[in-house]
View 1 (cartoon, rainbow, N blue to C red):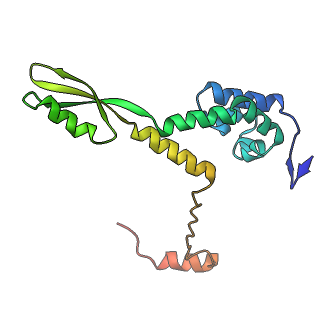
View 2 (view 1 turned 90 degrees about the vertical axis):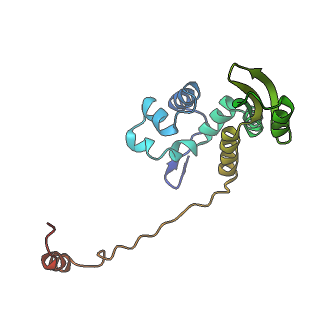
View 3 (view 1 turned 90 degrees about the horizontal axis):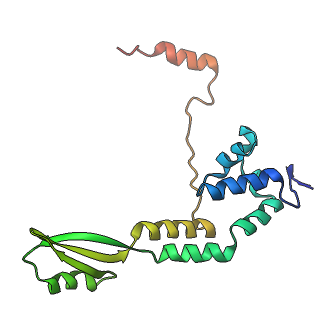
Length: 174
């Protein structure tokens, strides 16, 4: 079947299966890179939508990345926490240190007294994971608007003769 010059297959081809396996095995390898490794030409890999718009590809995505698992992992990223550590003066009271963190979205896990300071381990929101998850959410939902830059080329409408005349009248750079 063909729609506007793009071939749409009803079932995944062996090459499509190889592409998705390479992407999953290598932790998020780009579609283009996986396509080249699976035997697609570089020109085809420059237009991965020819592959990703196929019905066979949709079947593979559902098989290897089922929506339930994807949503569960994505939700985990949105609410990810990590343990970070901070150093405080040895003279600072443990209660005061806890007040600093426990009033926010953080929780003091442990305070260790060393010879010179207090090391405080805190469970906090993993802002990098949350930011990444939000970025993915906006991309999936299509919330990002494409940025279109229009650059004007003042020479685009000039003939070769006009351009040569401008070049000839310029002073050479020293």
